[in-house]
Amino acid sequence: MRKTFLALLIAGVLVAAWASAALAGSLEEQTLRLAAELRCPVCQNLSVADSPSEMATQMRGLIHEKLKNGESPEQIRSYFVSRYGEWVLLAPTRQGFNWLAWLLPFVAILGGGGIIVVTIRRSIRRGQKSNADASRPLDPRYTSRLDAELKEEER
Image (cartoon, rainbow, N blue to C red; front, side, top):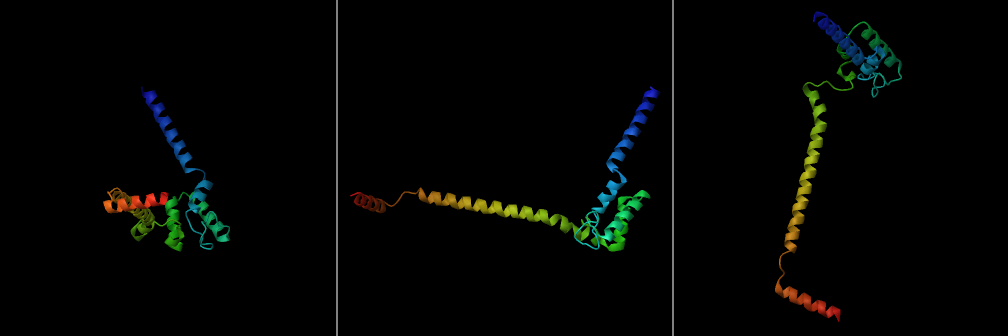
């Protein structure tokens, strides 16, 4: 029983180590993933991972060194934010006023969808009202006059 428990414990530790290594990826993959979250100060519209500038190359090297030294991605992000400001992050942080940048697109989509639904419902109601008006019986004077004019046309 004890050997089985020890074997399961060792297997669990090995599986956990393998899973964390697989999720973390190689150092280069982590570097590129983190560099893709940062804006290049020179190019401004490109991430550090995509930018061909010398500054971006230096930043990628710095990210690689910091990851090699054991710093977490959050510590590295904080380092660049302290150096360049929150502007260096391609995606704004989810706190305070920045929540507007995250939520406003969804609110706009929902609002636009609501306007479309209301417009469609109104046009359907108008169509039903006009159909109801068409199904009312006509005044007998007009029907007799219409019949007379149709007979005259047939001649």
